[in-house]
Image (tube, rainbow, N blue to C red; front, side):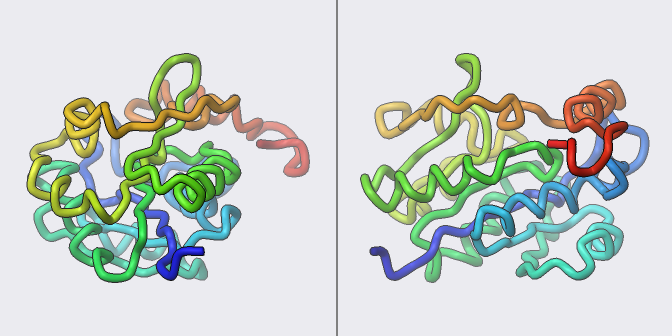
Length: 208
């Protein structure tokens, strides 16, 4: 068993360029999207870190009562990669691996981050991602042996996507049965689709 844990990092610092207002505060079955996304970590049994930046106070308020460590990214306007680097900098000495997930992906099943953490424990794979319908999704697990390489290689708004393409020989993709690993909220239409899939109009015990 590894002495350092796997952390679940929500990237919640960015701008909502194609959404009216802050999409992370939009309602999903009675809770803000960012709160629903944060609940994935607790259900998976992983320690939660939230990278904040844009509209920080509102995001933190939406997470009231949830246990998490905050990493503030003052450079959030430069793109998603700055949030990835901020998380790596904060966790490099204490995390065996980091699972990165955009905070606008509230339907990730908790069993997926548990699965990735288990694979890391058993195989020492340094780069792991779920795949649904042939499409790579989130969270993406990055092992500590790649922290420095990733932090020095990424830039702009691509996050880890271009880095993964450049290190495909290291990537382990795991097929999963839930579309939640590939569904995010960029537009109001995306939100309506996720609300429908989550069953927001159904009784609470019948929702995803």
